[in-house]
Image (cartoon, rainbow, N blue to C red; front, side):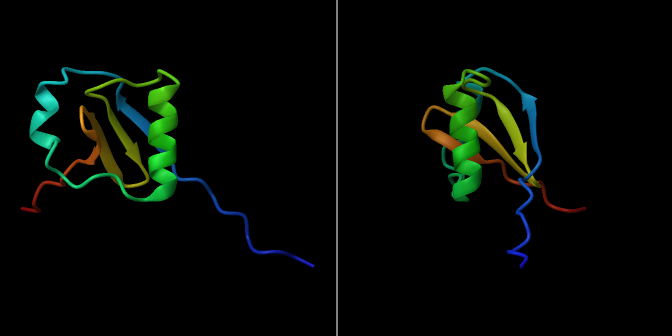
Length: 80
């Protein structure tokens, strides 16, 4: 008897470990991180002191920035 296939965790890449929290103010109005598995990973990175305010993390194909109001999705630039 085989169960359901094991779920492969998304690839996590830390693009920047910390930064200037004031530079991230423009991202504070961006959509918040909502994917539960991504939010759990982002919080773990922050609370383990792996990243800090101003950090940039990519999970799967989505980039997140750590702001003073929480993790926000980095908007993708429009295609040219």
